[in-house]
Image 1 (tube, rainbow, N blue to C red):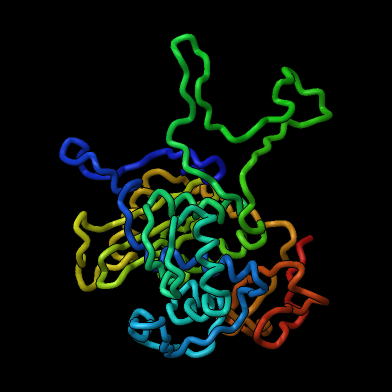
Image 2: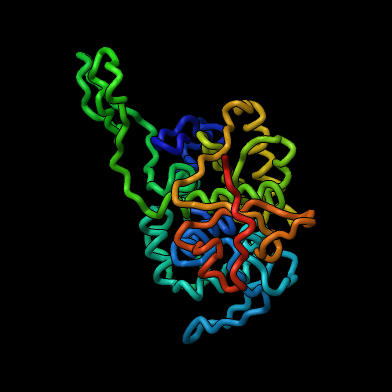
Length: 358
């Protein structure tokens, strides 16, 4: 899919249309599992969290209401890691951290956000939706990921560009962009052609870029690290549901977005160890190998209004000069005053690590 226009460049909904006309990519409603988590974190970043905000990763027991069992979410692997940064929560796909963020934001806010993003139509306002318990289609989820690439704009998938009659008259045109000054035959050197769109801005370009850098981290250090060997600029997220029934991987370069779902027509476990990183991700990897050149996977464009700092990825604190484990973290300008990060639950980061480009 083209993340800037929504054009569906290729779509496969099954092995054989002759044997089954049911399109699993656009019609099958399935739980996305952890592949949904980036939207919870995007909403958090829109609500004063930073990538270095500390969230507790510890056991949690929740009362879901009258006549409902108490809910005890767990991390994959059933381990707990204490205070961790928001970045690590998404890179490592920590369930308990995600639920705590959802608690703080409010389930109603998450539910409304998912409807706005066209991921879910009528999600139940339960905390479990933060872990991808509601159902959506691969096409809808992949389309929603476009907003991370294009600067926070909502894109609807376009399978048919336009329809023309026998005389060449356009009956239907799904192009949502206009080219200003494109009618000029020659360039005068004054006004460059400009493409404008009418897409809804669902979150800020700064949040979109922050989220992309975190999902790049998921590929470099987290659940998608099997893609690291490709040595391409790729961001993405795995997804696995309870009992390994549905597995996902949605990933992207700077100009191409790809969604992969693996599951059965009659939902049942794929196998004890069949996770998104083991089933869906390898399909993504093989597709990228054959279709994406290194020159096509350019670095993601940094958003205006952001600032970069060198920090310790485990603590979110400023990196020391002799630190071996460091990353470049992205913050919004409004969250940095006099070089110190605000709205972070930990101590303010020191100023000396602001990157300066000359």
